[in-house]
Length: 624
Image (cartoon, rainbow, N blue to C red):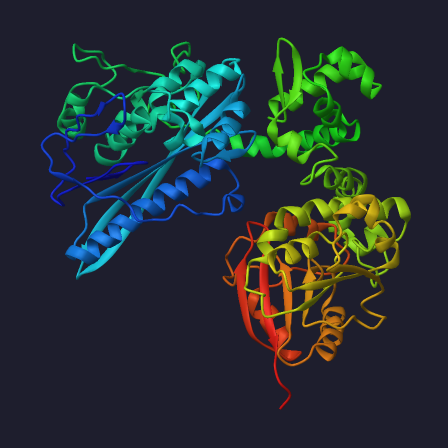
């Protein structure tokens, strides 16, 4: 068996059978796993841990994928080297997160201080993703099957002095630890309490891992599963008995002198269901209930959480707590002009959502809220929340009518006017803030998706506040960018982006890209534009760009590109927006490639810029 853990990688001979007897020990300075009776070797993984964290929906999804890629790399390399691979490869990756942000290993002492200060006096989560790769070699071909899981442990740091933090940093221990501390050594003095598996914080969720081994290698009979559930793993010397359960007359639910902890229900305070009720049919045969639909219940309540978030943003709760925290509910209520009772309930909901933290001293923002929900942050999504509350909430309230009669009829819009084209001053400013927040999250990924250094001038059509233009000029020192947008948008740019943020290589030009002459440029950019228009308007716009673009010039399209497979799941945000959109649609790469080639752009290439955006680059072909 092979194990890939953050530092050490072990592999066994391929003769491992299902009746294994693991003996697992934890050493204080590092994690080492010994498998009794098996030969193993240390094999460091060569996988470069540079996955885009922003492309994963949750931190633990990132940890699982990293663990999987580490294990797959070793399995494939060993197979290429020896034309055979171990039976099993186990990869693990542990990360520290706070407020949705993943903390890497610090690069220097100042970085360690920044991390530890962020954790100081707060709760944070430690996730370990584990991937178990089953290997099979047939005719020199390697087949792989992956099982995966994750474990979460919550850790609370004490309120620590500057002197103590620096003493710990000067010890050198934080420098090779995710989050800047090691709980199994000196870092343990920083921790006030731990909820969950302590060994998970050390680096490997031993209990969950052992349960998974039992599940994979020693599955009990169906009738035993219906009769008993284990809430913890039996001692390691019982593994052989578990693997032979089909031939045994003993009931694993009964305790014995080997320390087993089986019982009829996973929770000790539950009473077994009587015959004829849920869990047993009329013939007394065990009937397993369906899995508890936690995700579905969260989905059903999802609109309540969104509304609570929108109201908290509208009342500027996160702005108040960014300026002055911690604050009691009564103080916050006075600042936002609301009732104390209602304010406290709203604040408690925000705590449950992971947006606020609550202590004896009062409420304060999480790091996530400070960065994304306070209205003055560089990466603030406050404007997007307000636009969703004031504009899209009412549209989704009328969703049934839109489905029955069509969005154009339900919302009474002219088909030639897209939903997102702003017309009125107040709406324009709110729309711009929403688009600016989204653009700031992806601007650098879009700017670096391809090497654009060959271009010296670019025109961002519908470029709004110039967030992408700024990222482009920062990345390419020779590039000058023109932001071309409606006059009412250009008029409000300084309200969203102060004058001081502009550079002499960015200019803002008012105009309508369907009516006015397009500024001259080597590269034309359409970011989040084409999906808002029907095919005829898309062709009209591409034709105007093509006629203006010189041979050798380029077009850069940033959109969410649908997968080519008919059964592939589409983007959920894009699909939801389509429900209330009067026109426009998402497209796949073949369709985008066909549109660009039809208008004279060749060498069409695709790159990913995170979970919600893709980038397409085409080059203007020379005339025949």
